[in-house]
Length: 214
Image 1: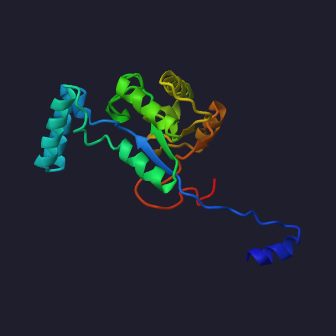
Image 2: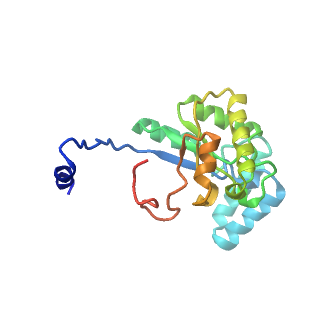
């Protein structure tokens, strides 16, 4: 088909050569198990493990983490897999992108953390210093509010700089993959994002835009 098109259009047509590569990304909805932050969150997680997951073992691990974290011990946190993820991808030669929520006083739908927490700041610094990338995970409501999205982007850039990280250019992926044809792309472009990886499927492989190319 391609050769036929070249003959019809003209021999001056040059086909672009493309080199495939692997791009590994991670939405940081919860950088640590919520139960270690507060008693209400611990009870919520305990109920979820017992009722929805039906896993007393998982509930016991959650309680252990909640108790240990209050003593400053984080090694029992089942959510803290960032070191493992980075090591595996570094060995494979992959550069990762981690999309962080940047919400003040987050509600349950937008995670449980803020960028000004010391533990989150240390994670941001570690990611950038190791040569990986930090991006914005635009909050649930930011898809309908450009000013809200701009504030979240500013806070993320400030948090990276505040923790000693230096990064040129930021990408974005909207929370819950929310995207509107009539405005999202224009808003992200106006704010200066280098890429947007929102348009994927959350539960199946495939190309939501019909192509794997940028």
